[in-house]
Length: 83
Image (cartoon, rainbow, N blue to C red):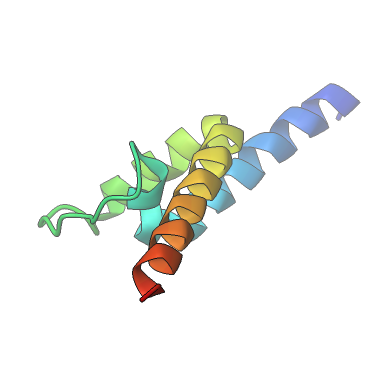
């Protein structure tokens, strides 16, 4: 296996693992820190596979949006705790 193939494979495998680990919190990786809706198809195998496929290519972007949502939520909770 060449070095480039190893890098590309590692990137995709890490992204798929990232997707499988973040599936239950995928609402934090969308257009802001909103509450997720509970719909019937949210936990299906197809939904998990699709999320893992999306994350396998876009995991750096997903990680950045997740950090931004985490920052916004922590800032909001600190603001709500003030008297």
